[in-house]
Structure formats: structure tokens, C-alpha cells
Image (cartoon, rainbow, N blue to C red):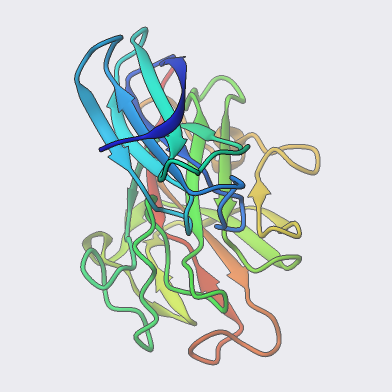
Length: 256
């Protein structure tokens, strides 16, 4: 796995979990000006943990298990000898466990064969952009502090969406068809906040004054809850002709 014109970076994990590193815009397109390659090592001169060529077009992306306090070394460079340029590498310490990945294998098949594009992160059924909307969480899930954000990307731009919470992962986490997507979360459903996606199809629950997910959801330490985002696709509808779709599901166990 040769990486040309490489540069090196280090990253120290703040907690145990999983990390994603992606050369991707919020819309799902390549965030670099060149054809990238990416590899992560568990130490200087250590073992390779993950490597990738193409994830967002020619933009690379990896996921790997992380341990709090461990420093990881990241090699970034080009596919070929002439590939170099600038780019924005997004680093996400993922919180919770994603489920109901609508790729046609890990969940109920999507309503009209509109399974997602098997992106690096779990996602819902494909929308008009032929990609699935993603829900992930960032921050520490402390029930006593407003430390967690729900984040959705690859939604349809400039349209309403809803973050919601439930106590059940529907159909054993496989989901059931609903609109152009799969509803994966149910039982004592609570609407958390309605927001509007930006021009890149991005939403963060801390926008517009912010949302304390734990307080709004009425959770305490030790509770396990499931989350999903529902979003509009516009009056013209999506791949199956419906005006709405959903992301993957996400399970979070709240801490003190």
C-alpha cells in the first residue's frame, strides 16, 4: 500500500471507542483536491490498524477501535506519484452503537430497492442523491451534563428534519419500511427537536440554541435509548416517490 507525497499526523484518543477519519464533505463528496490514500498505525513504527483508498469518490476514509490515552499515527498522501494538494480530514470519536444499516444485508430491504451505498458509516435508505442519510453522535453521553450532540449528514439540503428517541429497536434492530426508508426506533417515542438541514444536508442538535438530549429525552444514568433522524425529501419525493426518509438507528447507554 504505497502512499505518495505523504505527510504524518498524530491523534490521541480521549476515550475508549471507535474513531472515523474521513476525507469527506458533509454532503458526502471528496473534501480533498486530489486522489488521497490514508493509513493509521497504533504507534510510531507500529502496526497498521486501517487503510483506505476511495470512500467519498477519491476521498479516503477509515474506522478503527481506539483506547483512551493512546496516540495513533496517521499517514496521509496521494494515490499516484503526481497526486498532492490540500484537503480537510474529518476526525470523529464515535459515540454509541449504530444499527439498522440499510445496505440490504444488515436490515430489512429498503422499500423500492433503494439500499444505501455502503458508505464507511452506517446509513439509512438511499435518498434523491443516491446516498443514505447518516446519524451519529459525538461527545460523552453523560445524563448529568449537556455533553452529547446528535449529528446527521447526507440529508436532503435545506429541508426540515426531526431527531427522535425511543425505547425499542424495531424488529430486533432490522427496522420496518416507512416512506422511502426504514423506521428503526419505537416504543414511548419522544420528539427531541426539529431543525432544518443546511446547504450541505448537515444538522447538529446543538444548532439553534442547542438541545440537551438527556434532559429532553428524560433519561438517567444507566438508561439505554435508541435514536433516529426523520427527514423530508421535497415535494417531488425520493426514489420510491415518498416525501420522507430516515437515517440509520443509534443506540446510546447513558452514563453518570
